[in-house]
Length: 466
Image (tube, rainbow, N blue to C red):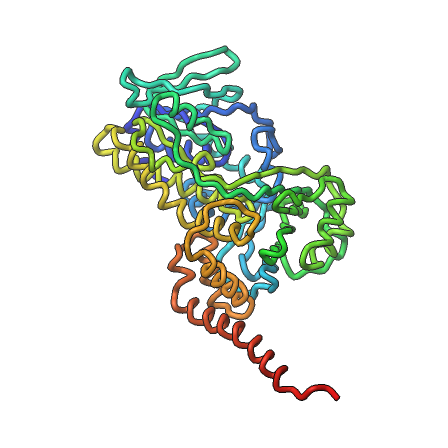
């Protein structure tokens, strides 16, 4: 990535997880100094830390996110491969059961990165730390925003840390602090009001552990995904190959139906999934450590773009804006796209040499990144009557179409290919409404309606039993 010229002075990034690291890398092209503030003092190496309780669970970097990593972190993917990560074909090497059918497996050419979140984040962190104009302030937390006298522009942050309370002046503040972001409270205290929030309540928890695969276990997959058949079932299970020849196993349950974090209960939960494949694989595997549970009550989108007023000198991205249901694996990729959008907006301001208008431009364009993945995940969650959230008119027809499309992916490689493109955020709604998808899906749907009627008619024409 070539330097575009560091035309701006300083920037503070709040939060040192993936969204913050990606943002810091992008910002280092445009600012003389980037200060990344993180409450945790990081351990050395790819190990879990308190500030990322979801870090030990299964994560997916979709192909669009992988491409972003490749552009901004040259050599990272090769480095990950050298540390045991695998790049697999997202269709050929994945056994995926969903809506009661196995998806057709074919060579898609869409790679999928398999490794632990801790290895991925640690590898990104090492490259970010190598940037000479990025400074890490670990053990510090941001306690509020500084503004000019008219409270129209953010001019810095108030922080607490090893040297007590301080104020840091800066040209831009980027909030990448995740689900726990305090930005709504800070904006309200400054007189801007809170953003509207869109919620989908699902009461999800996922329980995960690392396992040594059974010796001589025969399998035709590198990843196994057993999704439920909504709306009647809502338990999900995954096995992913990760570095070190291990399996990362994750079990999910909605609506308070959560997998236990003790071995016997975990295995019993696996046995109740819609297919026996995961249980059969897991029952002879050896646990390599304790099981961990992380709960996610809801998906949430904070609509900062709808605020009538918003201060200059401020940007917010990642889970601090939109926290997705992790079952669909979208969060890291959308954070990466948000960081790239920030780069685009900064490039558009580079010639002016002034950041005025950046905050407004970025917050109004970020929904274009979020809208499609939010539509996909929220639509799937709202299949369940128990899920609480706004249901738009026509949602029932959409669910009918989605079910028929998922069923069709078991027999039609063309439909599966287009669905895969949508899943990896390579296209929007038009991807699954393309004629090559709509026509076979509607034909399949028509058959699903006609066949029960034909069976009923044949039953009625049969003579009564003697």
